[in-house]
Length: 126
Image 1 (tube, helix red, strand yellow):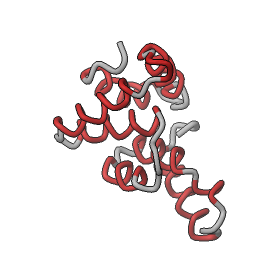
Image 2 (tube, rainbow, N blue to C red):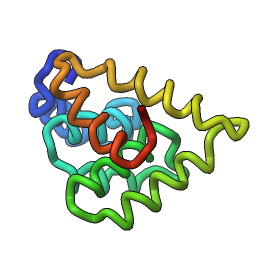
Image 3 (cartoon, rainbow, N blue to C red):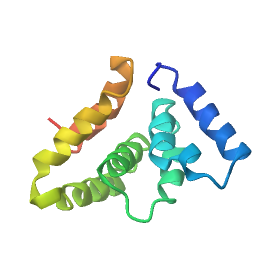
């Protein structure tokens, strides 16, 4: 994903998980979610999210965007509302800034835009 090759990132994460399933550093769920989102594998994004006891802003944004991309608008809006409601110090702007910074991880502008477009539709980013 940072090199613009989300499919290879997902493959590397899965390989690390097979080789050393006990070491969580090799299977960081957020990286897995971001790589899967970049590969347009929205179902995997949602599956990996289940590993997180309490998703933070980036996973929630990825979940909301994935639900919207899968045509599940009601669930996307629910997750988006949670994301804004749970903003640190009640500042939704901090969530927007965080998500925009996270989108910069993608090497190609099209990959970042694929994440930002549904988040704009949900009112999470401008």
